[in-house]
Image (cartoon, rainbow, N blue to C red; front, side, top):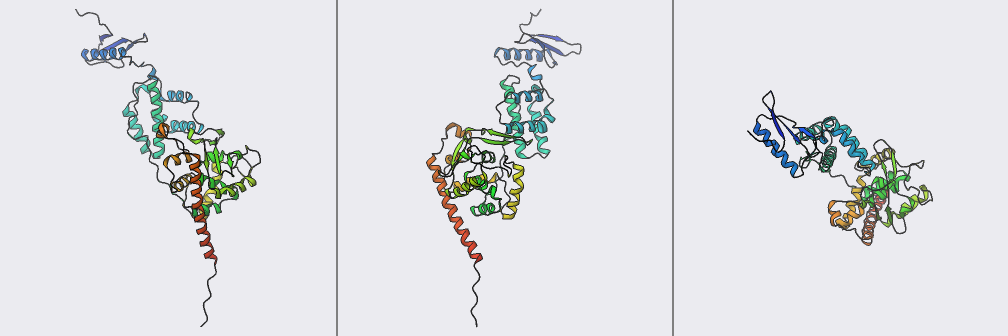
Length: 387
């Protein structure tokens, strides 16, 4: 007669299949989630489960019973320091592109095959490449937390390259085109376009600037906080940039100093904490309100139809043409990458002024050429000699 089993119990059901029960590390007696065709298969399952417990690799199956939607809600609550714009985007991705497909499934039962089917569905559904990559990155982050919390054993998001998105090359304006565009902008926003181009500041950084952040003598602008506009139109003031690289002081070409000084005198209150770029009523400048003016100016100027954010790309490209190094460009436009975190150092402030000075020369040369061309157009043609 066979002796009593050291771990677990096996019994044959009336159907002829075998059921297994075992005592987990938490003291709960559990059945296996499935039955087995043969006793040998049941015994093998018990051996594997015992080894799993002995190496402290056991996952409580009850933890994985929570739905992905519920776990994602808890995941968002457990990240209180997430930037408001990132949170709003994550909520939208979950609501529109993740929960409708996977939200009701127990998180412990979602397999790599389920992720592949979901990924194909959102791609086939016409979702943009950038949004697909963001949705996949978000889902992978949620499952990473579930794995660290020992809710699941491994992350089912295993599609190579799914989180990567290759941005399309954006158009770059010439200095001449930038000034043509500025000429078509309302006076209140000419300095906004100038500063956005020749410092590479983001929209939220520009709109968040206070009078004290601009030094027209030293020709510097300092980013110490930003304004965030979330999807529901709510404005969040005095937010911190998403990385420390965003907190920076950038030198601007001295040639745009008079335009900035004129803007401060005409449109900004004298208090040091007054916002530099505001609506005509003095409120926070919103993207939607500015967009109409921006599109009209682009059309009138006859330049490529770029986004305001593309001024940042234009400015970085022009700065690169001065000979700025990669590290200097990263510091100037506030980029933070893994490599930067591991070893990149901030560019020196003196070198940043060298870049700004080189920009000055480029602006002078282009403006002189443009002025000469305009003068030639206005010059009356010489009268022919009489016969």
